[in-house]
Length: 312
Ligand SMILES: Cc1ncc(COP(=O)(O)O)c(C=O)c1O
Image 1 (cartoon, helix red, strand yellow):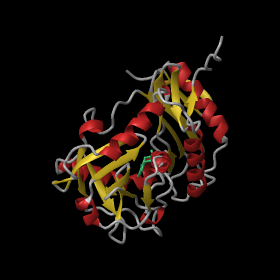
Image 2: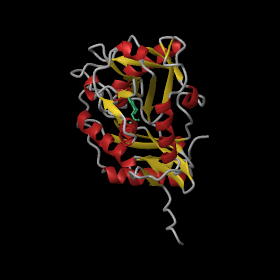
Image 3: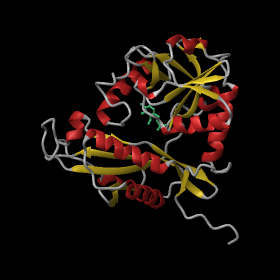
């Protein structure tokens, strides 16, 4: 069932009324910037994971795409928590999107199109399937590469750039895989269509750095923090494709995919084909913190309802 309300330019409107005109600039050219955020169910109600990091990244994307919009990250944080309250979600996926609206079809768009800001929420389960978190998924190396650093702004979630992610996903699905992994322009491993990747070999954790045209994922950053706390060595270096075939464990990270193990790549099993020890350890930490069962020692959760003070 759809949520009741959508936030549009500062107002709460009914889901059915959140429509746009066909001349909307973003429909034609992908002139939008978006975020994907999750709120998790806890004993104290819904809690949004790393909310402010997401709204800050949204505003950074708007700066790069040169789309001016009037709201501060704090105002968007408030709008998001209020929307979740009004839609009465226990848990949800949150999609803010800022885009050039209807006005002119010239490519430039600036000054001739109004900026529209929408936030919608929806119930969304496991992105790569309910079994995936435990059993892992099968992936392929895509024939599509990530954009070169001087042709796209990989670190920004700009709508038009996601044609590349769609190509990677569709090719993988057509070939019977759950997801595709793109190489960067130099032929090194970059990331999944909508996920960052971690490769574990001989107890050392490798993950591509931002020079491999990745989105600097917030889940990636979370996992790096958890790995560092666990005392693991992490190396940020160009990863050759064959490392994917040699690895003991591989997992994806992302707001949608959370932490999902890879079971096979290009039909070769990853390790023994089962979820690995380090993957499970990091998943336990991640899901423990996001469900409120483990202490939120980094202040990653924003509770939608005020928590009752202890002792009341
Ligand atoms: C291309 C791409 N890579 C990685 C990620 C993972 O980023 P995050 O953990 O911030 O959701 C996403 C999702 O936002 C993405 O779209």
